[in-house]
Length: 554
Image 1 (tube, rainbow, N blue to C red):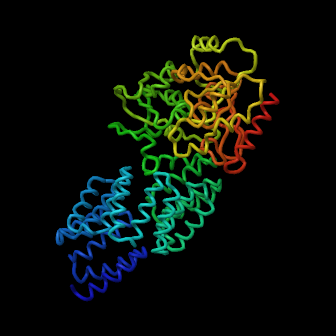
Image 2 (cartoon, helix red, strand yellow):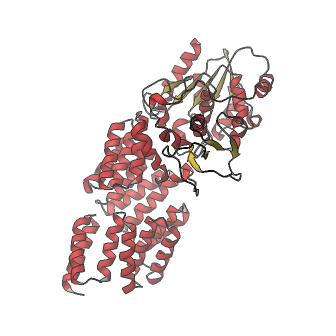
Image 3 (cartoon, rainbow, N blue to C red):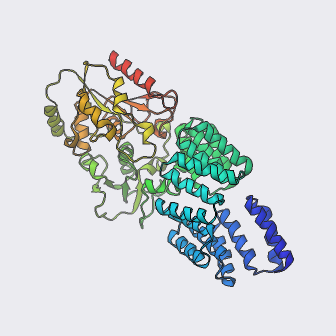
């Protein structure tokens, strides 16, 4: 190899190690002028493009490098990383396998293959590959950090932190490990410690968009929305196509009530890696309607994309779309089908999973507020917009028997797999502290109980439970219609209760979901709702005291 090219390659490698991509590229461009098809230079140009998220450009560089050196284990592993960035996980696994066939002791390829398995949620296999890498090279910091990330996903947080610390003991300047540990500390609710770790990562690499974003997420969790937005903007300044930053910025804007700027960014849920799978993205051969095209005489499919509570909250928009001259096909979850029969504005109701009829446009429910230019003052906040069969209401009246006291419906937790469920759900043992004895008849509106509540519930005997008699949400709605008040944590039930116009008290974490906004006791979505907020993170005690005080006075 030309000695000057070798010198330039070494200089660029040193820069890449410290994520100084611009000078690294400068050295490589000098080298490419000396030898335009040097496969080692092309490989490193591919590495730089991949680190910038320019995966298609990286693919070209690496394919050209491999034409000259088809059995280069480094280039094949780098190719796998590009496929990983493109979310072509099977192609990534194939590239790593080819790399390892050439060099079975290439620890980086073992670790990188672990990363692909991690993305496929094959965590045990990923850990086995990281362990293989660390057996080959125990001082491989990236392997320790990558295994730490996988342990974090398995909620083995203490083990994860141990692995990050090991990585940092080997490379104190390893900014990714500082950030990864910060994310784990965030999961543990150690927010100040998390911020310290993100700051350390940013001191090592000021253009590290992921650290800016992760710190923004932690600031959001602390209710510091303005600071969070500023951090997301920093991330986007360094990488304008970083969807995680724009998505999270949208959430902070919405939480503080800025729908005009927040709702367009909320569409980024389809591109955000952390949200897209949960958001329920659907692929259709018909265009998405976002308020631009005329719907006069057109047929539009409107469908739910997330949870039942979201469906209940946003189905209020269906009639507004119908008023634009459209024929509405509404696809509903089976659990809501009976309740949605005859819903105003719907031309045809389809249960999710059934064959869909012809339509001209489609729109997920949570995109309609954007399509209709919703802001705080234009939310269609009808006092009630759902109704339930009078026969079913009577059926539940008879089932409840003679009414001797005010009836209060209760929900303290959900059975959801939602990642943040622990922040919004309570244990029954704690929840009953809000309930005055003897003055009320308490009715459980939960169809199921968590294991942690079952034994206590069986012995408590002061809350009536109907369980499987609540066949679907029409039963829950009919039961609610026989109550005087609903008290609930943030689940689907208070959305149902609010949509029925029933007086509803909702218990909220310090920083709740964006729809409940901040610093107000009412909701612009539901006139019958009153909000009880944690004054500080984790303080359910004062919330329960206020609920008990208000109940005692009612």
